[in-house]
Length: 207
Image (cartoon, rainbow, N blue to C red; front, top):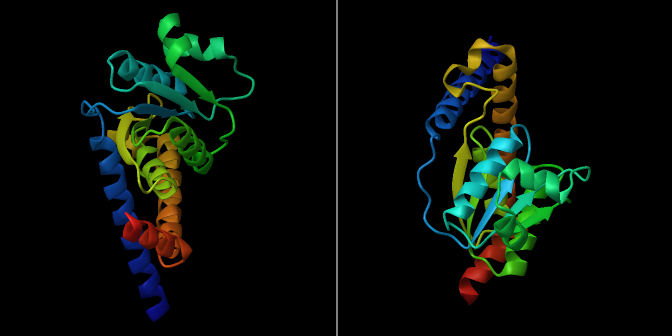
């Protein structure tokens, strides 16, 4: 009986966390107007067209100097991405970089860190789907603890965040993303007790 009671408590906590996560996703859009940054990074994935177009609109508004599209399929050409972004060729040719190495969110974080370091950027606007923002920001902040990162979530056309439980596809997506988010939280908690914490403390002392 005690084992069953403990299991029910864990399930209740998990379910409450899922509801809080879903509410956070729902409230994240429409995104507030971000302050000006040095770079804009858009993470590709489901609904990439809307994300890329939103990031390009920020670039056109002068919210950043350059833009990185992270995780581009190797089958896509530079012109394919320009069409999706709805960008004027002049702005696209001068100020948009494509990253082809990232295959997942962790890869996005590494690709973004390398790009920001090469450009010497300290302030970035991160554009991705509303449901993806919590996990993406965890990964990116873990990879770039010294950078100022501003989230810019984009509403996901295939999922109604306010009624995600009404369709199996939306429910599956929300639950899967929540589980991935919990996994990253757990990983970061462990890392915070190990070498990363020591390295960050050393950097803070030097700074």
